[in-house]
Image 1 (cartoon, rainbow, N blue to C red):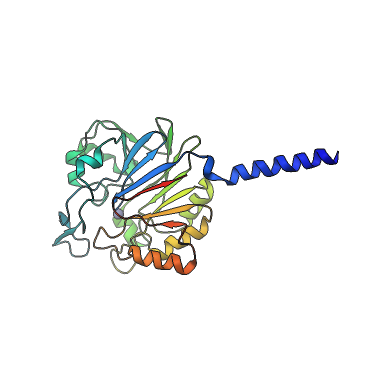
Image 2: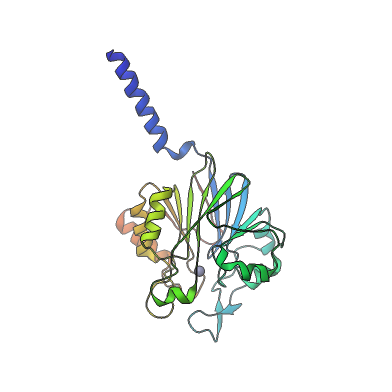
Length: 278
Ligand SMILES: [Zn+2]
């Protein structure tokens, strides 16, 4: 009888180890191109997010719109290289820094494109033909794409900036990714983290400001708070050092993460860098 109890205990330990150990999942490649443009290799497919493909200084400043000061840096690779092997496009919203004129010009209009209903008119105007509105969730080749909400700022700015989305990506034997999008940290984001229990969280951490001193997306502080809310997740922080209204830098976030002793959990890729996670 005693032996049987030991056996049960051993089985229970083995099961709990398996649940807490992510290494039995397939790996995921996340390549930051620039800003929120990423190539995510997931469950055998390559998804391009929020393509902003203009050259440096091609479009207006978000601080002084009379000048062309964005993007503030060039792409790390040629557009041909960026678009090579892309199977689908995922758009969080259609602001200029997430889908720009250059991207609209060069991307094949027949490629599967997933987006939020708020942007239906804009997407139709751009001529994309193979489009899917993600209301709650959609399937792309066995990848579940779940839309998540959030707010692009606080107070008056939210009305001005309109609706934005984040997305959760799920597939069998793969880590769950939660790409938060252009959102500030609020109760909705906290609830999404609790609900989806992601292994990987992608944050937009540039600390952009608009219409005064209020943040319209997370800064270093809020990114660290995300990491504290999801202590078992890896954070990949992007949307930094590409636009002139983003005031949180990679160095700010790195310093803060080091102060908190969580620098191993917050990954801050350079433009062009690939992160492999499981
Ligand atoms: Zn943005």
